[in-house]
Image (cartoon, rainbow, N blue to C red; front, top):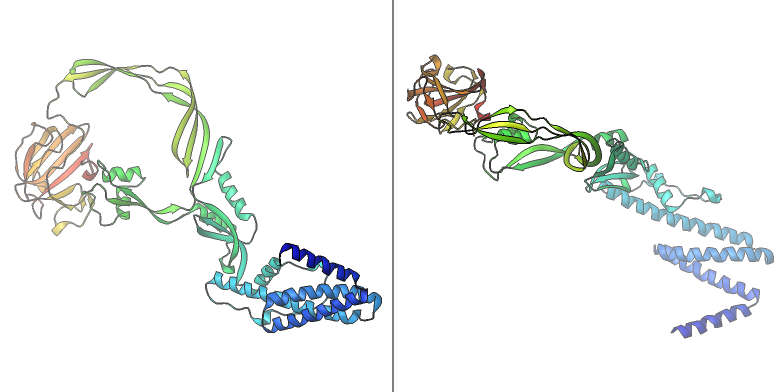
Length: 493
């Protein structure tokens, strides 16, 4: 039927109904009521609840109309009222059953297992209620869920898709996140944000997974298990990598057990941390402070000083500037500083220096130490089990195993202050490098230098042996600063 035909059919039917007497109209409504009730009963038997609900809803509308009309004309209103109560009860029972099925599905999905509500927990009854006592579908499902007690409608906090916790209190998570951000702000704060994607979602959760807000706050301030790594680059040393990441050499080794710290390879990946914070908070602050202004340095050549050495003849003085800058912090660590303005309060004073032009002797110290010989480390610095009951259990250097006669070289330039036999060291060479630095080379089979001799970095000074308290051929190497033995591995390059 096209639109024109439909309009003609509709107009004809309206004319027919308007021409009916009230009695004819009532009979028509009765006829429609009987048809709908028969169809609703058939739908209920077939568990076609959609059709049942539609027919009963329309039937109730007809019953209400007939009841209002017939009360004024025929004494059958009481029967219609009973009919109305019966179908209202059936309709609400079907709706409640649907809600029960939906709650069972949500509970099973939340708990990860099958779930059925005990029939004894649900009872149906009919009666008169005030309109304000009626509840909507969502409220009914939530109250039924709380009565069952297995799952609860809650507000869940997600960080990068990971659920951190849940609370039944609306708005509590948003307030908690706001308090965390406020704790990092002051009058100079420009912005505060989380690097992660932080979301609050309303959903059903297992009741026993609800979290106290105080505990949830502690969780957000804590760390979670996750690996932070560093890729070794050219020029890296073990001690420098550790220091740059706020670790000691031993702490870094504990995170990378079994690693040979003497053989760093470019491109190798080291574990720097086994945990990361749940939330990464970025704070941008505008700060005003008095900053120092660097002074210039002017040099004058001097033939009395060695090349690379200098002498201050007139010390410089830092200036001062009133500075305003935007500073970015990530979890309290500054990562960026942008200076917005700088007003000089005091001009800096230039420093004057003499710089050497005289050629430096090859034996002068360079300030860095090379390995004294090639080989593998058989004993490290510090406490140890005395090998074969020989030697100290507090090892003051490192032992580098090598075949007898392997050359031993000066670790840096300096002056030989001892060359000969010295008790447990056997044949020993000791070199003074100035500024309190000395190096020891022990257990040599023979020596090639003498006391008072100047040696340059890399010059052969002895041959590997096993003299003194020794269990095999090796070079015992020490670094001492002002007489105190230090771990050589922290100085060798």
